Length: 592
Image (cartoon, rainbow, N blue to C red):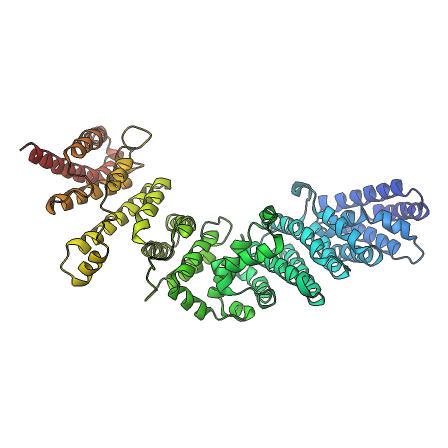
């Protein structure tokens, strides 16, 4: 390889000498130069432990740097090679630290010699090729570093030009960051350059005045929130926190407040400032901004250092959310971005759950009947689905327990008139038998609470019922819920053992409804009407008894699985026969 180094340098010198003389038609020499650099790069990347190959690469970059730094080099030559050489030398960023530094120096030299506007286009184009063609994240770092310098060199239309570049920067940052391990030096290199971009945009803002400044600050706010999300994804909290501290320090400058980002209101304002009315598709390029908005406060909840960096008072934000139900609904809805994410670490989700417990704890504000919950319904529903994912998939027992407590509190914060609709939708959309069972138990608990309001001796409960006398949960909708489990829409009886938990819970709910309606001599749900009793008996209970009896009989002679089958099906069998008895008693009363 030492011989190869000695041979490659004269060849490179020959190419560069030819290029320096090709003022009129330099393109063939430029292609020859980039091909040579690619061959040197391939040798270095194919054998990363070969020091001679790395030295070869460094030598090539050194000679290129010396060539473009020559004061006698014609500007036409510089302009011609500026279109291809930044991309060619950036590929060396993944070879070694010193190759990265020299690649950045070469790009810096082009920036000092060429039009900033042209260099902005060249660097963005170099970042824009299909992600799969970029073999190493080190390729990105020199280009990002170059863009941070170009932003400072722009003379006019700063906002418009930075606006074009930001989505390209974000796309490549996201693609590369998800590939890197926390301990990989390239992780720090990548986000150091991302921070340089933010610092450059801030420096440009300081120079501007009026509307352009406002728009660029808003764009910087979106960029900061987007990077907040990216630096948190798939990475340890300890590795991400230094960058989170830096990003949080931008909050006062960008007009970002914890209350504004946790409710999403500030995000909407700065988004409209940046994209206007007719460019909504622009925000699709910044798809993680709301993730970052939620995360910024959750990071603050986890670390006092982060709160100080953002110059915020988190305690007052939590108090505001406790005292303002509308803002609390907005904040809860924003948490879906964290809790539903498959790329964020469980530690951040744990802090998000703890934050929800904080803002729903103690004496929180009561529902204002004049407030329209419907506009928040979809986001609250999505947040509840996300909390469900934590309940189901978290390996930490304490986290699952806290998530369930948060789930119940969020439900309790929903107006009673919409609570059943939310529960029904959660049950319909869930594919977890255990989760469906939990939801049905919650429905039963809500119905029991409502019946206490109606029938209890507690003066407070009775007064509350008198003010809201119309039943909400005791309706035929409950029977439809039970039927969905015991007689699935796709036809046939439920599947065992897959649906065992849901079936047991549905049977318990039906039994509770039958006993309560018959004891109270009511029929709010229609459960004790003759037609519904007959339907439940013939279409739900008897087919279910046939299946359960057959499975129990089939497994009696199989010693390996009979105990499991018994433990699973015996409770179902007991409740099923009790339901059959109750229905038969009610049918006899109808016949009497």
